[in-house]
Each structure stands twice: as structure tokens, then as C-alpha cells.
Amino acid sequence: MNVLHVVGARPNFMKSAPIIAALSYRGVTNVLVHTGQHYDPEMSDAFFDDLGLRDADVHLEVGSASHARQSAMVMERIEPVILERAPDLVVVVGDVNSTLAAALVCAKLLVPLAHVEAGLRSFDRTMPEEVNRVVTDQLSDLLFITSPEAEDNLVREGVAPERIRSVGNPMIDSLERHISRARSRSRVLDRFGLDGTQYGVMTLHRPSNVDSPDVLRGILEAVRDVAAELPILFPAHPRTVNELRANGLSKLVEIGATRAERGEVACVEPLGYIDFLRLMLDARVVLTDSGGIQEETTVLGVPCLTLRSNTERPITISQGTNRLVGSDPDAIRREALAVLAAPMPAPSRPPLWDGKAGERIADEIASWGAARR
Ligand code: UD1
Image (cartoon, rainbow, N blue to C red; front, side, top):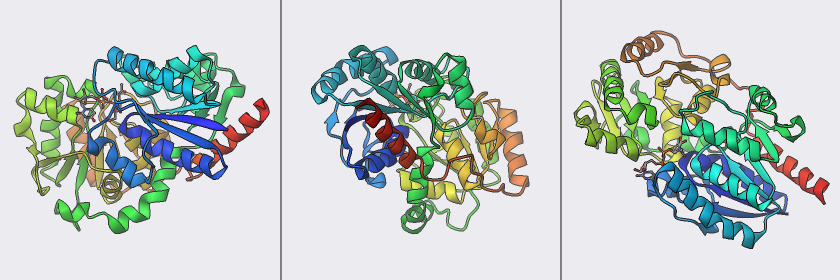
């Protein structure tokens, strides 16, 4: 069997890595295509190194552009690759523009498509990712879901139940595989003066939080107040740093900080997978608008405050450590202080988040392939 995998942006790499490893073990030929949606070394190469993911076979080098242009470039450049490689199945993960673009090309070429992390819904169509999720799921032949409510969402949208497979969460496979190395090898706590110190971590990159200067200012002022209680390390997405600089907000954080001090929000470059995992492991609180971090903090038992008004991952609230806070500064201050006053939560494992999702996905793909033959 010949399977083509598409990755493009930072949150894709840790989902594809365990699937590719499990398929390779079963003798499947894997072709890895990197669209180049993320291209800065710390947004891409660092993850390939940390995850032990071999270099992509094909680089499409699309780079940054508007959503339409970026998606169109992926479509235009991946079509000849799919035609030439003639895969039995294309596997896409997550909800980024590269995912949607590859899915559309497969549908047009009548190439079977599998979507990993299918059925997640925020029910907020102003999020670009929600559009990507809904369309990709409609076009997929095999839908691998990470949590039970995804099946209800898909069936409600008319997806045939026999296409849906409950397999667990491959992002947690990567976490399990690398956690001991993160503990023993990462020097990130020393590097920022956090060893033995209580600290918080923040990430922020959603357009709804960073593209409006007023919203971004409110969040940063609130988090600065929280930093009076404990240092906050803020590995910032390039998009966020651009917005900080363009809108005169750089003074609210310490850009390029070499140590994280109490009273400050230390804004540093994006971290690789192993260093960020190490940082989360001992964090007292994580503030984020990322999707994957809501899941990782649940398994690690670290309180997570999600700076969004909705989540496509409700299981991290019902069975995990996540709390929706939105972007209102008072709510951020209040909830963060409440977390700091409360005991640490216990780690939690939603069903099948056991480090074996990649194996299950590979088994499902193998039996799907056998049935087709
Ligand atoms: C994308 C995904 C989002 C995911 C996030 C993870 C979509 C619609 N969004 O958002 O779902 O959570 O990745 O990080 O696919 N940039 C760089 N270097 C890079 C990549 C981006 O400087 O390597 C800057 C550019 O200014 C670019 C901006 O970041 O315009 C946004 O990048 P883009 O890939 O369009 O979206 P993300 O915000 O990264």
C-alpha cells in the first residue's frame, strides 16, 4: 500500500509522526508532503528534529498569503504530486488551510482521503479552522475521531457512520513517546531561570485575539497583572510578534527576554516540541488559544485557561483541566488568580488517549486497504 501524508503547519507534525511510524512498521510505503505553510525553522524544522520525523519527500514551499491564495497554492502544487505518486490513500490531519486544500484536490481527483481529528466543532464559522474542518470531513472517506462527541457532530452533518473510526488521539502518542526525553534532556527551565520556580506559560496566535489591537492590549494587561504573582513565559508566534510591534504594544511584554522574572511577561521565540513539553510539565498554569495545548495540559494535569469563547475540544473541559475564559481582561485576571489559589488538578485521560492511536489508525488503514483489494 502507498499512503501519502500531507503536513503544513506546526500542529500537524506531532499528529502525523506516530501514524507514519505505525504504517511503516506494517510495511506501508509512506510519502510525506510538506506544504510549507509554516516555514520558519522554529515553526517547522525544529519539530521534525524533535519528533524524529524524516525530511519530507516533497516540499511545496507555499509560504504565507491570504487564506484563499495560500489554499489555492497548495491545491495547484499538490495536484501534480498526487497524480504522479498515485497513492492508494491520502491522510490529512487537523484543520489548517493545508488540510482543506489537500482534501479538495483529492475529492476532485477521486483519490480516497482519510482525515485524522475529524468531527471536532467549535460551531463558530468565524474561525477559519471551523470551515476547514466541516469541508474536509464532508470530503473524507475515512474519518478518525479523537473523542466521542465528534461522532455525533459528523452524523448530524450527514456523514455515514460506517466511515467513522474511534481511534484516540495521536497527539497524545507523541506526548507519551517524548515526555521522558523532555524531562531529562531539555534545558529550557535553566535557560530562562525557571528551575525550581513557580511559573506560568502563555501562547497566543488566533486572529480573534491578536489581530485586534484592543483585544490584544486587554489580554496582555491582564496577563501582566497575573505575572505579579509568578513569572510568565510567552513563546510567541511570529504573527503575534508582528502585531505587537505594528500596534505599539511591545512595551507590555519583554520581547527577547533571556530570563523570565516575576512581574513580567517574558516574550521569547517559539520553542521546539521537546522544550515546550518540558515547560508545560511543571507549569502552574497555562494560558492559551491553541487547540492542541488544551489536550496536552489535560493529560499532564496542568490547569489550562483557554482565551477563547468556545472550544472544539469540549472533552478537555468535561474530563480535563481546561476552562474557557474568553478574552475579557477581568475574566482572565479572576480565573488565573482562582487557579493559583486552588490545588493542582489530577491528570486525566479521555477514552483511548493512551499513546496507541497511531497503531489503531494504521490497523484501520491496513484493513480498509485489504477490503478494497
Ligand atoms: C495556522 C493555522 C492554525 C493553527 C496555527 C498553528 C490556518 C487557517 N491556521 O495559523 O489553525 O493553529 O497555524 O501555529 O491554517 N508566519 C511566519 N513564519 C511561519 C509561519 C507563519 O512568520 O513559519 C507568520 C506570517 O506572518 C503569516 C502568519 O504568521 O502570515 C500567519 O501564518 P498562517 O500559517 O497563515 O496562520 P497561523 O496563524 O500560523
